[in-house]
Image (tube, rainbow, N blue to C red; front, side, top):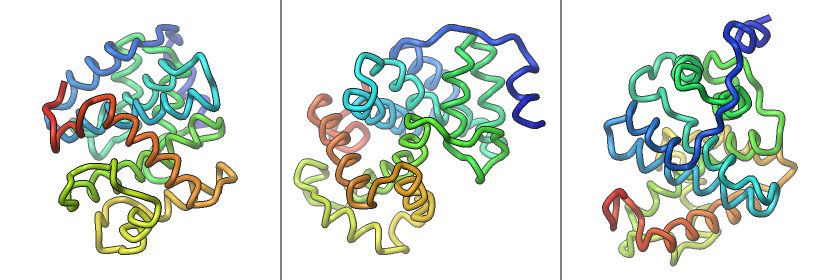
Length: 210
């Protein structure tokens, strides 16, 4: 019943934000640089995945990824619930809302379980990008470009490192996708490396946030 209520309490909008519109909406509700950087990283990672799993819809996947934490800074206790209202008020497409807000299934009050491949990838990659970003800060190079699967797994296995990044969610995400943990880590690392190359450095660490 909760899911039905969430989907029918207001008329569904149909606007799919452009990448720039999605980031503008994120920035309007998030002042902290890390939250803004994280939105850009996850949006880009999702677009990278879309190029393989849903080619031609990279901007849609980007919007879903960029908007996933739109409410986190203002409403941390209502994460993925308050976001529904924020996105609806902005006229965002209901499909984008559902997919973006599904990423904290079982951890917040979101009524939507990640069932589509895009949603499963967001669910899995969100936490993992945070762990990789934290690992970058510890490296002399401050870069993903000299990282590999082994170096990320070492940090993953150290439960004290970036303890806020849930290993359980990452592992569950890989299982939902039918991937090994190594496949998820390797692909997400490649996506973040592509983002860093595109940006000419890692925003918030070696370059200014655009």
